[in-house]
Image 1 (cartoon, rainbow, N blue to C red):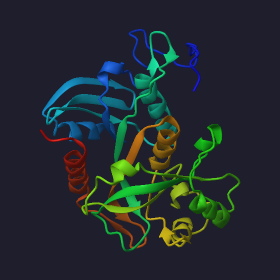
Image 2: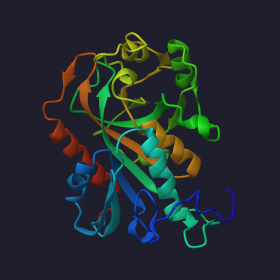
Image 3: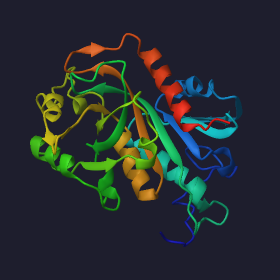
Image 4: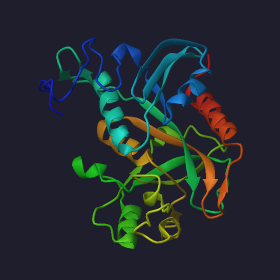
Length: 289
């Protein structure tokens, strides 16, 4: 990447020197970052910290940084969608890999561990509500990667989706961090996540407007490539994985399965499932003394 000075118009800082959207300075960020979509879910994670040393909020981006088991850790909210994730990932990367005073990228880069704690719907009958699923890979149905360098990752499922729906753009496929996936035990199911660019028609729902693609989720759930199928769908994971891959960060998405689309079921204890996922993630990714 370029070592030239980044203009003020390209990397915007607030008057206090914090980065524009996240309202953070480098010292506010830990190397292990848990992310959630809903701002109200941030305290659901930070309540398990031993202490909270820093809090801030700007728009949908709420951040708590503290300590757990002697380790510094951050949790922050993102809002919904890969457009928000593009902002989040770019600004998190700048906090650790750009000297914000000189505006020059650092020669030696830092890799963050970023773990998404989200909710998701199952695309397969065999994945019940109440499960916790780790995304081994994700396929993005949005166009974010049309604006960035080409990914050097396998695109077989992404290509099959484009063919099935006759999409005028190419979806993109990205794996999770091998290192983070290997830390998981049998508590976590593993699958391939479909990231949709909206909640209603992009996930096959009809209210007053009929989706362009009939039975979209069912059709995509039936695609199989080399014995692999899509397992669940949500709105952010592929954006995380793609930006993390391009920027050099370790990424993992954990999904509380709160709905099973084929069976028409919703988790009546969704909040408990989310809490169980949070506690399991902290247990795995925050080192004990």
